[in-house]
Image (cartoon, rainbow, N blue to C red; front, side, top):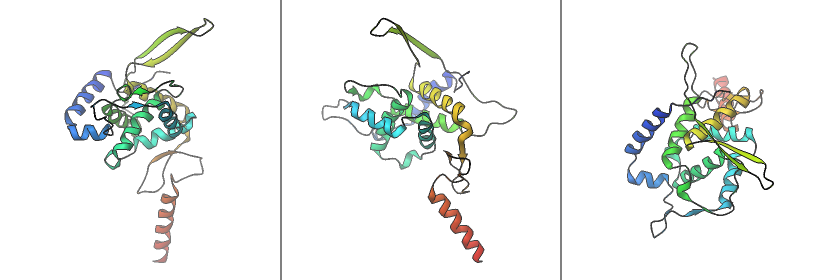
Length: 220
């Protein structure tokens, strides 16, 4: 499989451009304002990581459902706490099998700007592709060799940055479960979701809205 994403140079440029547009209050809001009175970032506990794993999904298909929801959220409607949760959940999405034995610094999580870029990258990957024009890029993979407690060689494969790591995971999920994706039949929604072939609406809210509108039109 050849993984594709935005070219590295484009990611770097977009990240720089995004950083310039984010004001100090906005950056604080995106970080969740989680700063101690000494101005140092607070730790993130192993329990918070496990909660993030539950939110993102323990199974691959559940992680795809989370990623679709993540890509289609309106950032302006999120609270500072939800924006901070996104940083922890993105870490869980990138490294679904990771286990923490001790708290880690907030600064070790994907940065607020990374979350913005990943959300935009995911949304772009969901856009229709022309039959004549291909859209994609490259992801650089890295690996680290190690040994287990019995001396057998182990390997850890990943990427050099959170944006590439998240894009790689999303691409793998799209490749595996893409045929199970559906687009909500509600004209006012049209969101992507994972569902059975006989499921046309992403939520009961959309189903109820369409049903109500049909009944009203039938009464006229």
